[in-house]
Each structure stands twice: as structure tokens, then as C-alpha cells.
Length: 116
Length: 109
Image: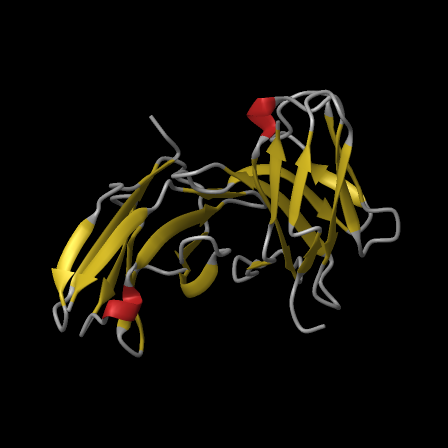
């Protein structure tokens, strides 16, 4: 595929359940970002991967949130014991991951998570 | 103070007019600046990027950067109803990208 893909597009779950959100970046992009966007807000940074490692996870709100990228391509964002406040659109973006300031992120379509 | 600040709007302009969108940022080590357009229910789409002081033009869009004033703007000439969307300002330091809350633009036919 030419762009970033995310699955599922929509996820409805009950409070307390565990969810996994998947992101498949653009081929050749080594950097991968997760954001969370609530209604009327800009994307809020969660975590950034360079290759397989999390280069910056300072945006994860608490230890219920975890993300992996075991082979440096597909990434999974995992949320344990979901709360209603976790409801948002979760966006994934990827880039070439160069150290140059010109490195540009391209976004996937997002996963809309609703916690009932 | 928020790291990236934008007026939430809505900013209403008549069709054919110039729309001016503004953004200020707090981190002086910021290196790269981006404008994204986001239609309702869709993901952000890159419109412009700018890295050096001055103006950068691409079609109807002009991005302006003033690092001394920590200010970046986007001008949209000959605004069209299809330009109606939320415009997100994004600022990148060494790795992390921080977004503003966005300005909603309405172009009135």
C-alpha cells in the first residue's frame, strides 16, 4: 500500500477491557509515531519509534498504555483496563526518520476508540 | 503557556479572499514547522512545511516563518469553499512533533 494503514477503523469496547490498535507504516519509513486526538483538539503525542526501539515514550499517559514495534515495521498500541476517558481517535504517522529537520510525517486514517 | 498556540476560530472569509492563519510556539530550539489540513472525521494532511526564516510559496499557499518572534503563519489566497477545514500548526524539535489545537476555517460562497 502507498500510505499508512491502521486497523481497525473503529473499535467499541467496554470499560476495563484490553484493546490493541495496529499501524502499518509506509514502506521504507523507519520512524513511527502514535498520537491521540480528542474532539476539538490537536493530535497529542504518545510515543515515537525509531526502528524497533521507542525513542521517546514521554507522551504515554500512564502504565496502562504500551506500544511495540518488534520488527521495525508494524506497530501495536496496547491499552489495558480501558477507561471512558481513553475514547478518542488514535492516529499513527510514519516518516523516513532522518535526523534532518525536513523529515515529514504522514498520517494514517486513524482508529476511533469508544469505551462504553 | 502551551507549546504551540493557535486561535481556535472559526475564521470566516468570503470565497476569493485571503485567509490568514497564525501560530506561535514556545520552544526556541524548534527546527521544523508544518501546516496540516484536517477535514472533519479525517486524518491530518500535510499542506506546507517550512524550515528557514522567510516565506515559502506553493500554489495558493504561502507559509511564513519568523524564528526571532517564534511565529509561523499560513496564507491561503483565492480561498475556496473546499478550503473549509481545521488547519493544524505543528512544530518539531529534534524528534518530537507538537501540534496546536487547530484553527477552523470557513470559506463562505
